[in-house]
Image 1 (cartoon, one colour):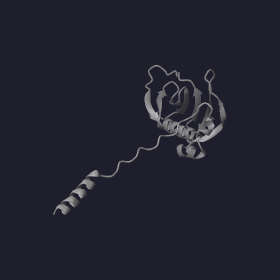
Image 2 (cartoon, rainbow, N blue to C red):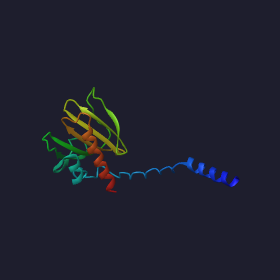
Image 3 (tube, rainbow, N blue to C red):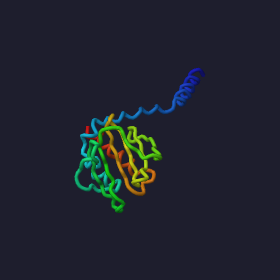
Image 4 (cartoon, rainbow, N blue to C red):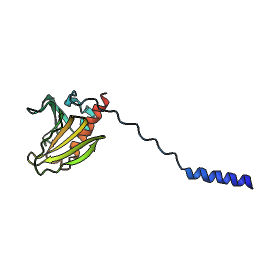
Length: 162
């Protein structure tokens, strides 16, 4: 009887333990540099296909006064160009009254907002202190989901380029 009780107790204790907890996923690799990257190479051909963009030309300097490079990608619906920028600095001028939404983009701090004056969604991610990936999407990207997706893919490419 005592042997039977020990076997039953062992079975009950083993059943209560449940499955072993899963190990946490390994940390994502860091991004080493943003500003040294060519923004035209931040979306692979496959990533461009996923988000429906086609690269248009070579990278160029960002607007005067801001250190960085920009690359334009065409949208097949003719709704304008999506731009991907790599810039140094953290100061961003946002129009008064604009609602800024803080968000995580591929594990890094980011934000998005709609610039009502230019009818464009802007997504900014800072994977390295003082270095920003900025994506601008004109037109109907009301919740900035297209811009956020493009920024996330660009960050994934930067991580893979270690």
